[in-house]
Amino acid sequence: MIPRTVAILQSFRGTHGELGVSDIHRRTGLPKATVHRTLHELQKVGILERAGSRFRPGLLLFELGQLQSTAQLLRSVAVPYVESLSRRSYATAAIAMLDGIECVYLHVASSPGCHRSPRRTGGRWPAHASCSGKVLLASLAHPESVLPTALPRLTSRTTTSPAALIRELEQIRSRGIAYDNEESAPGLSGMATPILGLCGEVVGAISISRPTTNGWAPSDPSMVRQAAAAISQALRKAELRRTHMR
Image (cartoon, rainbow, N blue to C red; front, side, top):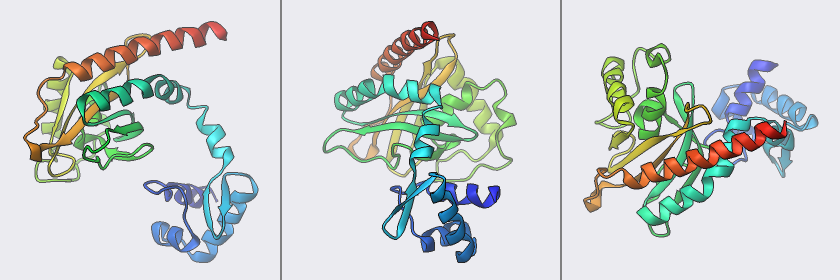
């Protein structure tokens, strides 16, 4: 029961939140009868809910998601700064956290008329192929312990050698900024810097990205650093308030 439940819930990743039985059958490879039966079992307990002939995550999942306090607190604090950074930089701005070897994007903001990044709020991306992911991997004491023996190639510029990535992470750790030079998507570049928690630990990353076709290249990190510092300060204050309320 648990493996097929996890497979069905994971099938909702990268969607707009609603899937039918046939969609889930294709995404999971599970027999349609098994999918149909499991969906109705998950609906009964509130993990999923019906939307006509389709299904979407239910209120129970939302409630459990609120228990992810660090992510929830970071998002609640950071959203105004991310939106402001997007407007000021005329770029896509985002905050992300690390989950294994993937970035999870807590909030993505794009200025009106600017190029839309392939990232989306709630979406995931391979950490080795994004500036946010590299910042977050660089914060680990032993990043080599979480990396697979081969890294998937997203573009011709993606680093696929774990050894080469480890060397880059050492440089990122020392300078506090990571760059994406068309490594995540062709024609798209960006930069990211860490967000710090109450004890100075890296809890997330903030980034901006823009197309390189208009001549833009990530160089001056001042706006991203300022946003990260402001979010870090606001997050520490929020964490202190939460600690005193317990």
